[in-house]
Image (cartoon, rainbow, N blue to C red; front, side, top):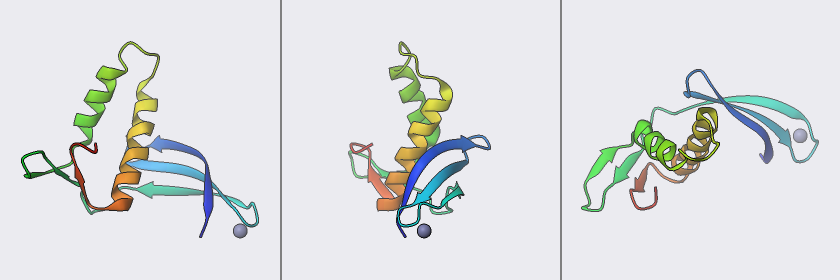
Length: 99
Ligand SMILES: [Zn+2]
């Protein structure tokens, strides 16, 4: 029930997250392959309308803001994976402000 994530990386073109996990009770280590579910995330915009979440939009914005820093594509993919994982585990809707 409780595991610690030791390592997390994106495989298969950003669609799957491979996570190395450790059981907090017996320290047994194992690997999970987590795919995005079929439930799509909805973004609630300022005017109250909803649109389907688009990964590419976030990626574009992040790449722009990291342009002058030494953060590569793989890191950006990992950041987005972690955010998506967090967002979709809370609800299937999120406000654009929160994003
Ligand atoms: Zn265990």
